[in-house]
Length: 429
Image (cartoon, rainbow, N blue to C red; front, side):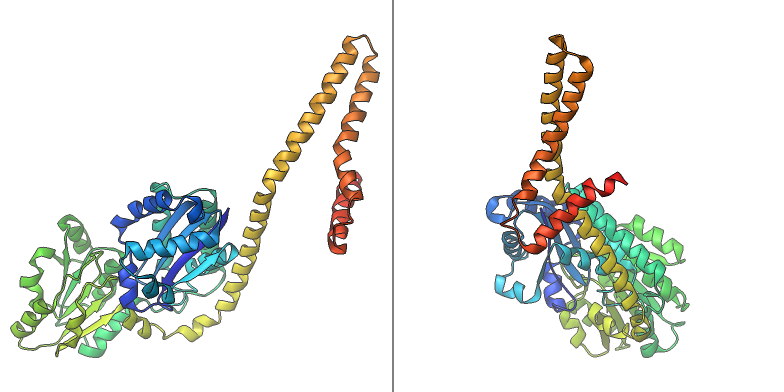
């Protein structure tokens, strides 16, 4: 069984492509089910495990399959069909990884080395949610379960042993920084947060530190919106009321799981007229985008996407780069540990076969000893004969293999001899 991953991220694909292949939380379980049901055949490489990681910066499909080459091709076709893309539109932006490449990549992603914000910590939580969703959808088996449990352990080790996240500038902090550049102090401004997820919660915390005039949460689920609003002494409103209320706000931060934009061109045009062209600052952290692309062309409207904020958060990167080499050293060692586990796992069938053969030989010798004793022969002699026969038969195959080395290279022969010496000679000490 092999590990494989097919994905695209902020370094390989523009936002326009990333938002088209993103998977919402409500899609994940059914999509994993379709992968396992439709791509489990021989022509698709026998995919038996699947996990989907979809964030604003990446979409990645992790799988276990018998034939990785066939499986990767099948996954590319599957993803293109699922997201209504042609193969020619998709593949220029994707990367495909197998076996230890997958292991190293997963370790780097979880450690924040592959993020737009170098060293950011949010990705670990996103990966844990993806693992939990895959487990619930019955997409995890031995390979992916082992991979992701070790991934979380490595991420913790990297963050504990290095300063990779010490100088991180988050997306939330970057949004506040841009707002300060545009408006200066925020004390007289009204801030609207659209959504009530983790990213909005982080943004609300950062903006709350600037003491704006008011903060409001707009969410489809009023209960969840009210719970978040209560934490920051903010107001709450229904998302359905957004068109009538949006002109009240100077700053809008949106991050929902909507498949379609919820802030349209007409809505903002009306808001600008009602505000008498007073500027609106909009931060769209959603993928797919919550704000129609045409909104950014309006005068008096300043729209920043997740990629725009990515450029802002590069500050502090130089300080974090000093910890990258140390982080990669830790990851390299843990990849080797995973490789050792894979080799051990690949040896299991051979070990089981050896145990079965030894058991069969022993049983045969025991039966002969019982028969000899039953016929009146001396018990001690029968037992000695049994021990002799078991020993001789167990080492017979090894002796035959050691003698038949003509087809082996010098290095292989030396390795085989070293193994036998270690087992038969060093064990005596």
